[in-house]
Every structure is written in structure tokens, then in C-alpha cells.
Amino acid sequence: MKQPKLIDYTLLTILSLIWASAFFNIKIATYSFGPVTIAFLRVFFGAIPVLIICYYKKIKIEAFSEDWHWFAMIGFINLVVPFFLIAYGVKSVQSNLAAILMSTTPLSSTILGHFYTKNEKFNLIKTFGILIGFSGIIFLFSDNLLIDQNNFSSALLILLGSTCYVIGGVLTLRISKKKNENVTGSILIWATIILLPLVSFIEQPWQQVPRTDSLISVIYLGIVPTGIAWLLRFKILKDNGLIFQSQVSYLIPIFGTILGYVFLKELITIKVLISLTAVCIGIYFVRRADRKKLS
Image 1 (cartoon, rainbow, N blue to C red):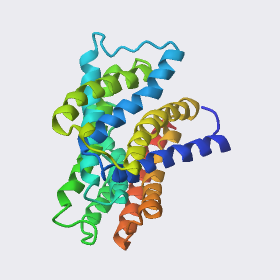
Image 2: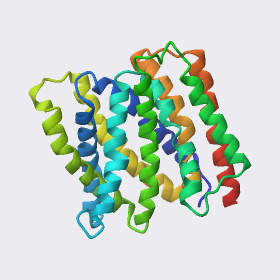
Image 3: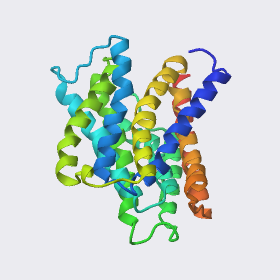
């Protein structure tokens, strides 16, 4: 991989900001839409830029090939379930908490990687990072100003949503030889197919008139953080490699906390800052162990 330049760090920062912006936009979307509708509109609008790219690059979409069951399963676990859980949870908690809780994905993936892959085993540095990171999350749950008995379960659901991302990532290894554009387009198609009857029977959003800000946010969520951000991620990954791209893990909770304060005036407590620091330190040690292994 080439030595990262200023443009590479700029693109990495933009990707981090885009993904971090998803959380306060989810919060705004919940003002008018239910969690199933938000999940459906995200995958529907997210599929548009990906499928357009596939069309112009003449990449075949294999959503209904003999591997359709893998695409359907990954679409359900990696998109449908976490998008629903996050939207459901964010309705009751601050978006900055969701950003911090979701940042545990690298820590969870390290745990699952130890049990389900051959070359991602624990070592002392990784174990230390996992313990520090999750200690920060446990500490965050002690913040009674932001998490109480009324929204405790909502925070847990967001944490479960982050775990679904990790499980979906492990399942994606089964079809890792296929083009990324094909895989992403196929799972977005299946996620849309799965959510369409659910949104039709459960929430029926066409029967209500949404707020303008909610409508803008949900369209933005689909096209930018779900669709365009994935294409940007793929460019960064191809140009600079996984270790460089994975640095977004540090930036997303930081930007998510800042954006939640700027746009929604969300409360930032001392415990939030301590938890955020612990999670970033934990991710640092996990990534450091991976970097040493690659070296």
C-alpha cells in the first residue's frame, strides 16, 4: 500500500464525519418515523448509489444467484436488525451515547474473531484493549443523568445492534471472494425485500405526514451514510489498506459526540468523556496488536 498523503487523511476524516452524522440524523428521523420505517428507508435509498455504480462498472449483482441465502442472511443480520435496533434505541437515548456504544464494534469483532477465525487470536495487548474498552461502556451505563430505568433497555439494544454488525461481518467472510460492490448491492436488495412487508403491515408510514427535518434526515441516512459512505470506504480500503481505514473507529464516537452537541444540544457529562476516552484507548490497543501482527 502507498504511503498515506493529505488527501487520504482528508477522505478518512470525511468518512468518519459521515458515519458519525448518522446518529443525530437517526434521532431527528425518530421524530416522525418508527424504527422499521427508518430501517427500510435507509436500505432503500442506500441501495441507489451502490446499484448505479454497479450498473456503470458493469458489475453483475448476484442477489438471486445460488448464494442468495447468504446475501439474505447477511442483509438481515448486518442491516435489517441493527438498523432497527439502533433507531429503536436512539428514540430514548441521546445520539452521542449511541455513537459511543456503536464504537465497540472493533472490540466485539476481536472477541468473535478469536473464536471463529484461525488467525485472529487473543494476545496480551488485545485482551488489555478489550478490557479497557468495555470497562468504559460499563462505566457509561452508570451515568444516571443519561441512562436510567426508563431507557436502560434502549441502550442495551443499541449495544446489541453493534454486535449484529460484527456477526454480519463474520458471515460475509463466507462470500469474501465476490466483488464488494456485488455483495453490498445484493445484501441491500435483500434487506429491502425483507423490510418492505414489515413496514407495510407494522407502521404504514404513508398514512402520516412527516416533519420536513425528519424526511430530510431519513433520505440523508440512506444515500450518504449507508450508500455513498460505503463507496468511499471501499476507495480508502483499496488505496491504503484495512489498518489505515480502521482508524475511523477512533474518530466516529468523537465526532458523534461533537455533532450531537452542535445540532441537538445534547448533554456531555464527565462520565461520557471518561467512557469515550476508555473506548478509544481500548480500540487503540486492539489496532496496535493487529498492526504488529501485520508487520
